[in-house]
Amino acid sequence: MQQPNKLKPFFENLNFERDDNTMVINFGPQHPSAHGQLRLILELEGEKVVKAHPDIGYLHRGVEKMAENMIYNEFLPTTDRLDYIASTSNNYAFALAVERLIGLEVPRRAQVIRTMLLELNRIMSHLFFLATHALDVGAMSIFLYAFREREFAMDLVEDYCGARLTHSAVRIGGVPLDLPGGWLEQLSTYLDNLPEQIQLYEDLLTENRIWKMRLEDVGVVTPEDALNWGCTGPMLRGSGIAYDIRKEEPYELYGELDFDIPVSDRNDSYGRYRLYMEEMKESIRILRQLITMYPKTEPQIMAHNPRYISAPKEEIMTQNYALMQHFVLVTQGMRPPRGTVYVPTESPKGELGFFIRSEGEPYAYRLKIRAPSFFHAGVLQHILPGTYLADVVAIIGNTNIVFGEIDR
Image (cartoon, rainbow, N blue to C red):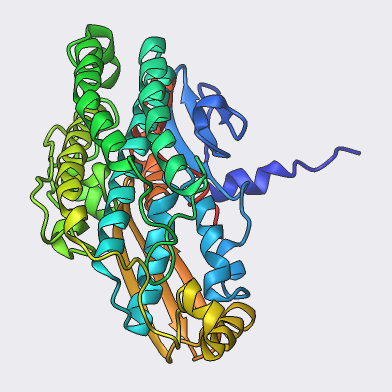
């Protein structure tokens, strides 16, 4: 008796009506260039992609449902595991959403430190993108150079919070630590050296004929397609649309800072590469301004609101009420007012937003995450058909997706 083909209904649902001239293959989920647990079902005619279907979910951990079963402070370290290339951007986005929910004002020094960490994380994320994308295309030297500068940035983060990858460097209401002695000087030295290294990357790649042949007119996303598919961040600005949440809906200190939003109208992978290089230069510009702001701030790094935030350690150790309030917040959690909030932030990859529905309990009644990589993985089914198999690797790397925030 012939065994039924269990894959047949799956392929029928995908409308893969192939003839003898095409072949269906799996790209991933263990492929080193899939940038995570991505399974691409490709229909090929020779080496040309006819149809593409991204199949996700292999890394799913139920993060949003976990958030609904943890008190707010307890969930914050879990956000590190979303976009683990730039952990602080996730910590911050969640903390900001809770702060908006409870109407909390963060001290200015904490705002300066948070913005520093956000832009340092942006540089780290962009360097990681450049290194892995170049390696996918075949440029080995850039991988080593970019990771070298990324390690120096991770040294700075480690000096601040003790961690290199999953930072938990932000708290609801501020930051856990002030900057250590000499940290600003180390950051300034790093910023003095980085432009020279970025110039080195550009000298090696920007006019490199092989690099241009692999990226120019590859992975084209028109402005209409970028909007229709929900692209944000470099994927949207690489299609000529100047939209950055730091400018459109400023948060923290971005409304006071002087910086530009790089835009490319090339619509292709090469234009997005140039965009990432320019964004690192703007992050350097922002960090230099923050270095001058820091000495002018008061030393307070956590908001004062006993209903939601624990008192400083000195008060907990000396005042009975502060100790009791701290005990309640740690064991039972804060109780935000009933309400709904959605807060978008500009993570290195695009719009990262947290939606929280509160019923006045220590746990979020509903929490949803708007992650940019989810949308950028979806657009692959639109831009891959018509390209060649070798271009698939370049396009996946150029979209800069990370599966920690896709498979939530």
